[in-house]
Image (cartoon, rainbow, N blue to C red; front, side, top):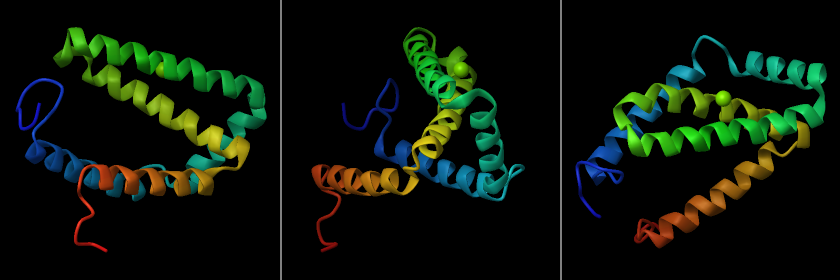
Length: 130
Ligand SMILES: [Mg+2]
Protein backbone atom coordinates (compact mmCIF):
# COMPACT_ATOMS: atom_id res chain seq x y z
CA UNK A 1 0.00 0.00 0.00
CA UNK A 2 2.92 2.34 0.51
CA UNK A 3 3.81 4.98 -1.99
CA UNK A 4 0.90 4.71 -4.38
CA UNK A 5 -0.23 7.78 -6.24
CA UNK A 6 -3.76 6.59 -6.83
CA UNK A 7 -6.45 4.91 -4.83
CA UNK A 8 -7.29 5.43 -1.19
CA UNK A 9 -3.76 5.68 0.20
CA UNK A 10 -1.82 8.65 -1.15
CA UNK A 11 1.96 8.66 -1.22
CA UNK A 12 3.90 10.33 1.61
CA UNK A 13 4.65 13.28 -0.68
CA UNK A 14 0.95 13.63 -1.47
CA UNK A 15 0.08 13.44 2.22
CA UNK A 16 2.66 16.11 3.06
CA UNK A 17 1.26 18.30 0.29
CA UNK A 18 -2.26 17.80 1.65
CA UNK A 19 -1.10 18.57 5.19
CA UNK A 20 0.50 21.77 3.95
CA UNK A 21 -2.74 22.66 2.15
CA UNK A 22 -4.70 21.92 5.33
CA UNK A 23 -2.35 24.14 7.34
CA UNK A 24 -2.88 26.94 4.87
CA UNK A 25 -6.64 26.38 5.06
CA UNK A 26 -6.50 26.41 8.86
CA UNK A 27 -4.53 29.65 8.78
CA UNK A 28 -7.12 31.12 6.44
CA UNK A 29 -9.92 29.91 8.69
CA UNK A 30 -8.22 31.39 11.73
CA UNK A 31 -8.14 34.75 10.01
CA UNK A 32 -11.17 33.99 7.92
CA UNK A 33 -14.60 35.29 7.35
CA UNK A 34 -16.06 34.11 10.61
CA UNK A 35 -13.78 34.56 13.64
CA UNK A 36 -13.78 31.67 16.11
CA UNK A 37 -15.40 33.80 18.79
CA UNK A 38 -18.30 34.50 16.43
CA UNK A 39 -18.55 30.81 15.61
CA UNK A 40 -18.83 30.06 19.32
CA UNK A 41 -21.58 32.67 19.65
CA UNK A 42 -23.54 30.97 16.87
CA UNK A 43 -23.01 27.49 18.32
CA UNK A 44 -24.16 28.64 21.74
CA UNK A 45 -27.22 30.30 20.22
CA UNK A 46 -28.08 27.05 18.43
CA UNK A 47 -27.79 25.09 21.67
CA UNK A 48 -30.01 27.61 23.45
CA UNK A 49 -32.53 27.61 20.59
CA UNK A 50 -32.90 23.86 20.12
CA UNK A 51 -31.53 22.38 23.33
CA UNK A 52 -28.88 19.86 24.25
CA UNK A 53 -30.95 16.81 23.37
CA UNK A 54 -31.88 17.99 19.87
CA UNK A 55 -28.31 19.11 19.13
CA UNK A 56 -26.95 15.81 20.42
CA UNK A 57 -29.18 13.95 17.97
CA UNK A 58 -27.98 16.32 15.25
CA UNK A 59 -24.42 15.22 15.95
CA UNK A 60 -25.48 11.63 15.28
CA UNK A 61 -27.49 12.61 12.20
CA UNK A 62 -24.63 14.59 10.69
CA UNK A 63 -22.15 11.79 11.41
CA UNK A 64 -24.42 9.36 9.58
CA UNK A 65 -24.62 11.74 6.62
CA UNK A 66 -20.82 11.89 6.57
CA UNK A 67 -20.66 8.11 6.73
CA UNK A 68 -22.93 7.96 3.68
CA UNK A 69 -20.70 10.38 1.76
CA UNK A 70 -17.62 8.34 2.63
CA UNK A 71 -19.38 5.29 1.20
CA UNK A 72 -20.32 7.21 -1.96
CA UNK A 73 -16.71 8.29 -2.34
CA UNK A 74 -15.72 4.68 -2.91
CA UNK A 75 -18.04 4.45 -5.93
CA UNK A 76 -17.58 7.87 -7.57
CA UNK A 77 -14.56 9.69 -6.08
CA UNK A 78 -14.43 12.68 -8.42
CA UNK A 79 -18.07 13.62 -8.02
CA UNK A 80 -18.26 13.33 -4.25
CA UNK A 81 -15.60 15.70 -2.96
CA UNK A 82 -17.84 18.73 -2.57
CA UNK A 83 -20.52 16.65 -0.86
CA UNK A 84 -17.82 15.10 1.34
CA UNK A 85 -16.49 18.52 2.31
CA UNK A 86 -20.04 19.70 3.02
CA UNK A 87 -20.67 16.78 5.39
CA UNK A 88 -17.27 17.16 7.07
CA UNK A 89 -18.21 20.79 7.71
CA UNK A 90 -21.53 19.72 9.23
CA UNK A 91 -19.82 17.20 11.51
CA UNK A 92 -17.13 19.66 12.60
CA UNK A 93 -19.79 22.23 13.44
CA UNK A 94 -21.77 19.69 15.44
CA UNK A 95 -18.66 18.36 17.22
CA UNK A 96 -17.88 21.91 18.31
CA UNK A 97 -21.36 22.13 19.77
CA UNK A 98 -20.94 18.75 21.46
CA UNK A 99 -17.74 20.03 23.08
CA UNK A 100 -19.55 23.15 24.26
CA UNK A 101 -22.53 21.20 25.61
CA UNK A 102 -20.28 19.00 27.71
CA UNK A 103 -17.51 21.54 28.33
CA UNK A 104 -14.83 19.15 27.09
CA UNK A 105 -12.78 21.22 24.63
CA UNK A 106 -9.58 21.00 26.65
CA UNK A 107 -10.18 17.36 27.54
CA UNK A 108 -10.62 16.57 23.85
CA UNK A 109 -7.36 18.34 22.99
CA UNK A 110 -5.61 16.45 25.80
CA UNK A 111 -6.85 13.13 24.38
CA UNK A 112 -5.90 14.21 20.88
CA UNK A 113 -2.36 15.01 22.00
CA UNK A 114 -1.96 11.57 23.59
CA UNK A 115 -3.46 9.78 20.60
CA UNK A 116 -1.39 11.71 18.06
CA UNK A 117 1.77 11.02 20.06
CA UNK A 118 0.87 7.31 20.23
CA UNK A 119 0.16 7.29 16.50
CA UNK A 120 3.50 8.98 15.78
CA UNK A 121 5.24 6.35 17.90
CA UNK A 122 3.50 3.53 16.04
CA UNK A 123 4.59 5.09 12.76
CA UNK A 124 8.18 5.49 13.95
CA UNK A 125 8.02 9.25 13.67
CA UNK A 126 9.27 10.05 17.18
CA UNK A 127 12.75 8.52 17.04
CA UNK A 128 15.44 11.06 17.75
CA UNK A 129 13.05 13.55 19.29
CA UNK A 130 13.43 12.29 22.85
MG1 LIG B 1 -25.14 17.06 6.72
